[in-house]
Image (cartoon, rainbow, N blue to C red; front, side, top):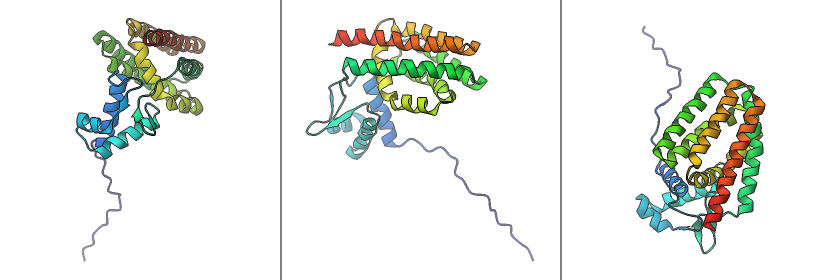
Length: 230
């Protein structure tokens, strides 16, 4: 009598699902804010966003809630969602925290950097260089984020990683403003290359110093942009 084997292996669907409408809306709105389409103080009117994005009001509302959780936008009674205005003391505090934590992360990472993570940093740096040549701000921001990701995930300090990730939306927002200053992106390329070279050579203190210098220079550029807009 014939017997039939039962396939006990789990039937997993490993296909990649397309992004949801809400995920795409979050990315589009984040990109618009970072590119300066929506400026600090601007209201984000749901009806207008529905027309711009071609999606339903519930999808827009969920996207706005996601951006509020990132603290990239804010919500107030009788005003709705808006892009918040940060004071210079608040901005300066963020840069000071970044200088301390990113410097420490770079030093820690240097001692345990893997070939794979160094390769990821190198690829991101190359992409940043191409974005600078193309004067593509969005690509500059994306490649900068990819440059720092191996450092944060590979530094071995989960608290540093969590704190900086919690600030990431505001860091990226400020980065978009400082890089809008003429010539700043090319200086950033030089500073990021200095960080990479120090890490690759295994010099933890040089990496710490280069990372802190990069943040301090970005802070100085952001102050000029802030004063010009005041």
